[in-house]
Every structure is written in structure tokens, then in C-alpha cells.
Image 1 (cartoon, one colour):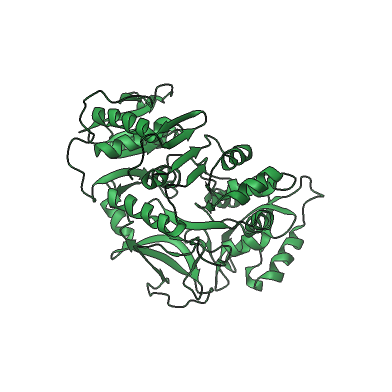
Image 2 (cartoon, helix red, strand yellow):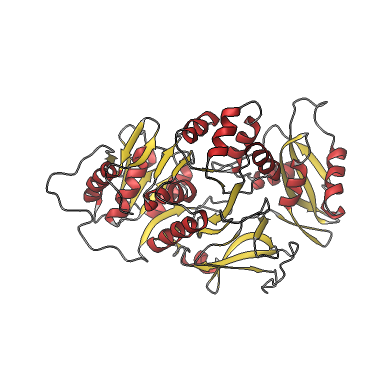
Length: 485
């Protein structure tokens, strides 16, 4: 997006770049890496990560974002699989030994283009199908796989969400998301730059940071449910937070379902609804609630974005045609937003598709208007108990509606009679055995709201739920704990 060189583009804490300064810094780095087959990027939440990403796109060089918290074994796998020629990092970043064999190029966020230097890129614009990024999945069922994201997929997704959210160059986006994932890096950094707007990155999420940046001209806030839960809990007695959220044009949550109690608390206090959207590494953005939608239901991730086709498929492979909010099917999508395939994994790529439809592994229902409500992952959240198919998400929302529950997760564990039994994992709202609700009370609470076969057969209490870097609950870890006991 063409914009004035003096217009603010990026701000990370006290450090900021205008569009002109970003063009100079990214252009200088692009000239340095142009022609390199592939680069790794140490994706810390810094200005240098944003500059490195823009430079790689300018140079037409595929970039592999690296999570700074990745363990040695996983990092070694990613490097061996993607084979980058060099690694981009901020000058002060301490890199692990696994990166020692790679040539290091320090990103200079204050570099200026030499006088009379040719514009970058000097060569032709890469083809739309050319790879732009290789983003590695979480690897819950084996070593992480590198999803190859072409330039056309990134452009299509950014333009589609801009349409749904009425995103313009006047918007100032605020977020504290990590920058090694599509949510924070592609939508959260490239999104505002494509519109000619600005990004304020918090560095590290905090309630105070959200208040400060929204009160200082921020118009949009991106977060994951963990962040919105912390905001919801901080609303009472915090008029500055209430005012800041109420003044934002758009609040967006993604990466996992936002619990209904947090929806309610935020909307009641601020008059603002949190917009949910649905995407994946391999597909970027698939659906979203639109800003002009009059009264979306909490829990809905909206309708397919422009350019995205979506269908639900049952276990027999037949398309689910019911729009009854009850019939569950796996989400499959196709469109220009899709990845090109898994790097070096042709068999895994083929298995991920049903013809030209990508199998997401996410289970959902649809309402009469075609809006999608996700009930969980096929592998971990679809519970088959006593002949019924049960989505874990609606049970979790019912549990979270109980005042004695702070956090809840539901899994299906092996049962000799039912096939799988519904197990609820609860973090109580108050500490101490006497303060927490009894298992019987929680089972009865669910039974009053949902069908009898959806009530938990077992309730377990924890101090905290295991979560990954994006705040998603690691249900396989809960299943392993159940198996051990």
C-alpha cells in the first residue's frame, strides 16, 4: 500500500519507524539477501523481526520464522528440514548453538538507503505462487511440518479480513502476539502495512499496555482468549480499561474459542463485542464475524471470507447439508488462501486433502445463516460416548458459566462401557479445597444446561491447565495425565 514516507508504520515500545524509515531499513537488508534461496528469522517480538520479514518479501526470498522458545531437538529438525542459507536476527539476540553453523546477518532497523541506490527489488516481482514463508506447525502428532505459504495466499487473506473488518489506513492496530505464527506476524504485522496503517506492538502483553496504547489512538486490538480472559477479569474497578476497550473500533480474538463468560463480561462492561475469526497455519484466514453483522452469536466464528469455500463433511465423507446448529462435521476449505503443501512431505500433503478440499481436522456446526461454530478438534475434542458424538466446546462453556470455575477443559478418555467418557478438568476460581465447587455440583450444573449424555462422568481439579505459546490448551497432555493415573 503506497503511503506517505513520514506516516507512522511500526512501534515497539519506545522504538518506532515511519514508512520511509521502514522502506530504507528493509530495502538495505533486501539488497543484502537478494538471491539467497531461503532465510531463517529469529522471530522475537522486536522491530527487527518486522523489518526482516518485509525485507525478505521485498527480495523474494522465502523466510522461516523461528520461535525463540523452541526446544533444541525441535529447532534442529526445523533447520535440517528447511535448510536456510542464513539467519536474520537483531544484533543483541543470543542465538542457540543449533544456529551456530549458519551465517548470521544482523538486522539494522535504522539503516538508510545509499544515495542514488536502485529501488529494491531490482528484479521482477515474484510470481503469486512463489513461496513467501514456511511456517512450522505445532507438531502435536509428530515432528513439526513446514507449511509453504505462497505470496498469493498472504495477499488474499489480508484483503479478505480487511473486507470483513472494514480495515483501512486510518486504523492503528494494537497487539502483543508472538511473531513466529501467522496470527501475530502475517495478520498482525503485514496486515496493517498492507493497508497503509500502523502497528503498536506491546512487546509483552499486559493490561496496562493495552490501556496505554488504545487510549493513545489505537483503534483495533488483536488477542487470543487467554489475553481477553485477563482483560475480562481486570474490568471490575478499572475504569481506564473499560474506557479504552469501549473506545476501540474493533476487538478481535483468534487461535482458539473465546469462552462465553468472557464475551459477556466484556460486552456488558464496555458495550463492545469481541469479533471471532477462524484460521490455521495451512489456510490462513477462513471465516470471520463481520463488523457490519448486526447481532452475531457469541461462539460463532462467522461466515466464509471472500474467496474461501467451506463445507462440513461427516465421517463417511458425505457433505453435511443441515444448518441446524446440531449436526457436526469436519470443516474442509478451498480457495486462494491455501498453502502450497508441506515442505519435503508430499505424502503428508496428499493426506491433508480430499480432492482439492483441505481437511482442517476441526469439527463444527452451522446455523441457519451459514455461520460456523467450532466444537473442537477431530482428534481431541470430538468425544464418542455411548453412541453419541459430543463436542467438548459446549461442555466447556457450560462449566465456565459456573461462578466457581476459572478455567475448564473437557476431554474424552477411554471407557470400557461408553467407549469414551467425558472428563472435565477444572481450575477453580478460588483456592483451597473448601472453596471449590464439588464434582457433583459441576455435573448437575452441566446437566441442567445440556443433554444428559453430555454431563461429565469425572471431574478433576488442577492448579493450571497446560497451554502452548499461543495460549491453546494442550489436551494431549491432559490425556497423558489421565492415562498415567
